[in-house]
Length: 83
Image 1 (cartoon, one colour):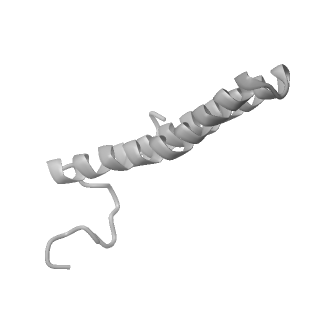
Image 2 (cartoon, rainbow, N blue to C red):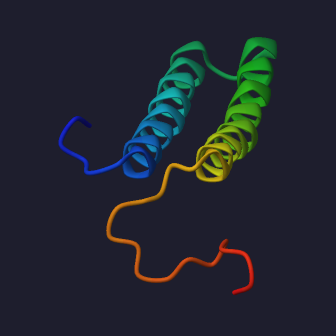
């Protein structure tokens, strides 16, 4: 992640790996344990991860943008005032 050029690509890579890794581990535990009450709880946690992780990374990126951190190599700024 250190080789990525700016904060936004690092945030994207981190959130994707967190979501994919967390979901994969929890799915592996579900397969290992079998279908029971624990697997239902783990499925709810998977759903929670899938919903909340993109929302939080979007909120962090939006806050960074409005704080003044601009992406590198930006061709068009859709969030700019007056666009």
